[in-house]
Image (cartoon, rainbow, N blue to C red; front, side):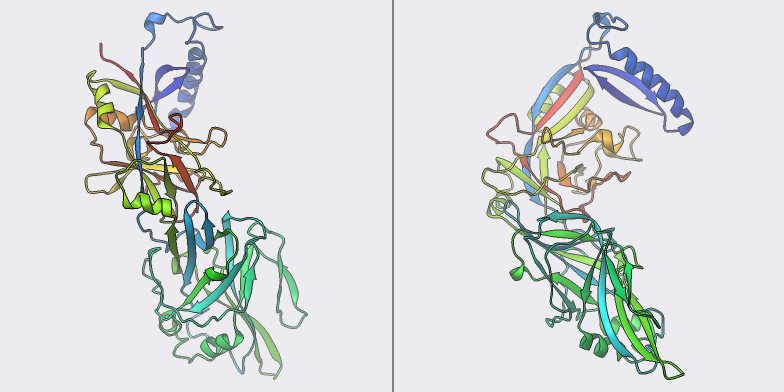
Length: 491
């Protein structure tokens, strides 16, 4: 059993809620009854049941300021991610971000052979688009894409961080490819495939980036590889190492952007090699063979170069600021601190009951920033313990604390009308006031908008969202971060 509070027009009603599905209908019935009753509890002259004001729970309100600071985010493991970042983004507020991808290839089968007298037709590296692009969505930006061969083996059993510096050959093995924009929503694309015995046929494909590779490189390094090097995946990875895909930043123009690739769909994302060889009757047989990779054999290398304003904040970590910053992909996070003297004002009343605690933060942009980049669609909120280990706050400790709220009620979603994010952290503040928890650090950081059914305390590798928040010294007091605590004093 667990108890939650429903707040309607300032009235508080404790209702019983069970974690067992067999009581769901009963709880829904009582919830509806409570909604009907309490819709009229503010004024006894409203239509509905009149309530004696003397019987109302009297709740005091304390509005507390919140101190906020910008910090560098922790590095994150990008191996195995559901989406992989790629591209080059010039953000006038945050700075630049470059994301490249290292890939480990696998054989079509152990002991693979190209057959008798193979003749290469073409080779294409295929990367399936994911469901996010962050940046310049027009065709004004261009992305010169390069593919290199790794000179260090991609270990398929290892986990790699976004800060990993990959060693690769400087020679470009892709053909000259400059993408004016990433058509990640284009579901109508068709490609010509070589099919034995008939004319090349147009086949409709999922949205994907197709990078032509140099035929000489493919012929020398893969088609002419020895039988020993094609005997097993281990032998092939020791021999071939892998591929490194990147955007040439000096040639990228305008704001650019970051696209995400879905490399989980292994029958789409792969290295496709089209070739012909001689059959027993001396005729030519046309084939396509795929050297595969997946999200578990792919890692994004992500480099952030921060703006001068951000670097100044990072160099002065204890100073209050007009604005603070949060950026996904291992960029930045916002550290919060609820002033102890403000909390002590509430503690002084004794063992109070926190009826509701809401953290409200406002998205702002410095004047003259000139950016059209949208603020992060969602922020995560979490705490750390004495050792600096990330922990969910009780209100978001899904499956770990009986008081947790569903994600949609816990909050953190951007409201474009008010330009605010809000979080319900009632149990967290109650625990801080009661001494059940000690305040160390509380953090905000961007995450993908979609619900996950988890607490979301790890750095996000699957969104490029970032946001600028009003800091503790913002010139507009209405924009500053606020903690609203509704509580009941003891009799």
